[in-house]
Length: 206
Image (tube, rainbow, N blue to C red):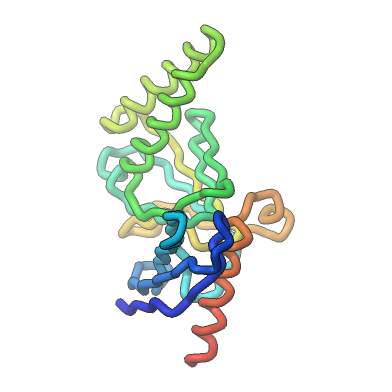
């Protein structure tokens, strides 16, 4: 594990130019090394996290059929350019301007999504929308207990998100072509700037 604190960029919120970026390198199966970024602005308090591969990777899709309770403990890495899909629940979580990254497991991801659905239900304007949200929440609760099989899909045009069981034969990995990758939302442009600078420094140190 390595760390760095010498990348300074303009804050995307207040444009003060004082956004400080710290990066830590972690060894992770399949990715070999992941750079975990923490970005903070001391002027306005804005903060953001991101996960990025220390190696150049191709756009990718990971799919896992969760049919056993033990698979709820499978590690999930989601970068700020990752799109999460739960087709059995009709849920897609796409990255937005403030998309955060995280490392969790399948159960933790379900808990995050449950919170989003609960919020959507509270703001639902029709009884049909509330009923649909309630049905999804019921299925998510069953899934958290390992009583509802479902599929998790994770796509990333930068190839830096992944579903990482100890036995990689359990997950389906696909490289996306240019057309498929172009349909996915990427990270905010300023996140790409951080990633590009990190990659340039990695190259210069080789």
